[in-house]
Length: 170
Image (tube, rainbow, N blue to C red; front, side):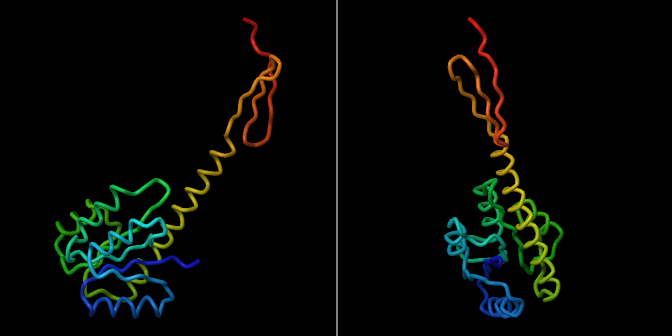
């Protein structure tokens, strides 16, 4: 299943531009026109994991959204955030990264650079999902069950192996 992108942009011109590129590249996407709408969408368990986020937004700005996403994120889910902005200062970029943005792209952006950064984000989210899955499998494999039957201790691990030991006499 293709990775869903959340576009958070209040400018109709940039919304149209981003929509056009994403459609052309085959990325499914959802649009939020302000920070509050984006935050509501990001609360859903099936929310997009790749976020194109404008810095200057009505209600909740992009920096505050970054902070909220990082504060409420879980180990099992990662949202890759690309902040789109006209702010070109080095301090602005640092502020965005400290707030939790993964990448920073200046407006007006080059369409091929945007596509490249989306592909990187998609790869990182995919790798995170693989890591979470592998970790879950390892936990299942290392599951240990201990039981006692008629004074004999049985230890079964997730691989199916069972060890038998006599219970110590008291």
